[in-house]
Image (cartoon, rainbow, N blue to C red; front, side):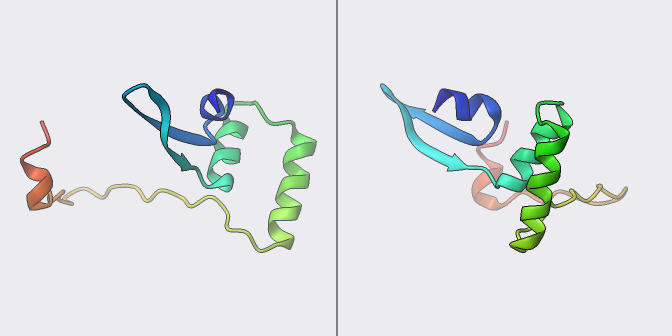
Length: 84
């Protein structure tokens, strides 16, 4: 579990003495893309992965839209009091 977390494939929430009370699985396409950007994925393996991803119609990593100037961030009422 620590290895998966260090590679960015999962995110875990510790509660009390339970290190892995809650575990969030990261989208494989996003995780592989992040590992490739860090240079931790072999080019041949990545090509094979991409070919399989296309064959199975798996989603590709979504591009994060850039924030346009003039956009506002509006906090939800319940979250407004908690953010500091």
